[in-house]
Structures are given as C-alpha cells and as structure tokens.
Amino acid sequence: MRRLALVAAVVISLAAPVAADGAEPVPKTTVSDVEDEVMCPICGTLLELSDSPQARREKVYVARLVAEGRTKAEIKDALVAQYGPAALALPEATGFDLSAYLVPIVALLVAVCALAFGVARWRRDGDRSPPPGAATAPQGEEAERLEADLRRYDL
Image (cartoon, rainbow, N blue to C red; front, side, top):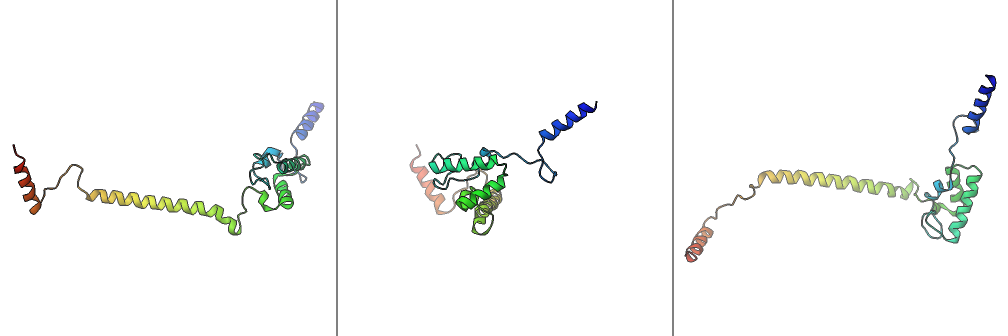
C-alpha cells in the first residue's frame, strides 16, 4: 500500500510542474502562442503570417526562448529588447498609444447615443404626423383650381 501511495505521489509531482516558490503551476508557452502577438520587424505583419528571412530568424529566436522555459511575458520583453517596441502587435496602454484603445470605445458610445437620440426623435415625430393615407383637403385658391380642372376633364 505504501508503494502505491509513493508511486501516485511521484506521478502527480511529475505531471504538474510548479514554480520555484511552489505556489502554482507554470503555464507552458508555445511558439504559436507568441507568434500571434508579435510582429515581423521587416514586414510589419504578424510573425505567424510572415515568411521573410528576418521573420524566420525571429521564429527561431522565439523557439529557443520557449525551449529555455521562458514565459510569454519574458519572451515579449526579450523581443522588445532585441527589435524595439514595434515587435509587439498590440500597442502599450500608455501615452499616445492609449488612443488606440480609447478612440473606438468613444466612437461606439457616440454612435449609440446618436442612434438613441435619432430613434427617440423619430418616435416623437411619428406621433404628430397624420396617419398614412389620410389626405388633407385643398384650401382656398388651390381648391378652386382643382374644381376647374375636374370640370374641364369631366366626360
């Protein structure tokens, strides 16, 4: 029975890698996890879509960092150190780059407010207008001209 418990403990310890402090398991990073979040510095396209010689070198560099057991954040930091901030697909959320996140949100809010205002106005104006098909009778000189036209075409 002790042997079974010992074997189970060894299997469990090998199955779940833990961090250095033993707090939680370390997520395994793959090359494809990183490739869709970084750019080729030459092409300006996602690394997973690029096939330039520089992109191939960058993919090898990422694969080497993954093999070393680095996390996704560490790999991104290494790419920024190697190729500059243009290596990241997403802009930082500070300074002018923050506008890449704020402008679409503000535009969406403005569009929703304009649409709500337009619908409210349309519904309010719809209550005042006469129902469809309800014709108004001509008045004054217009009515006289209509009567004269009808008499002229009367068979």
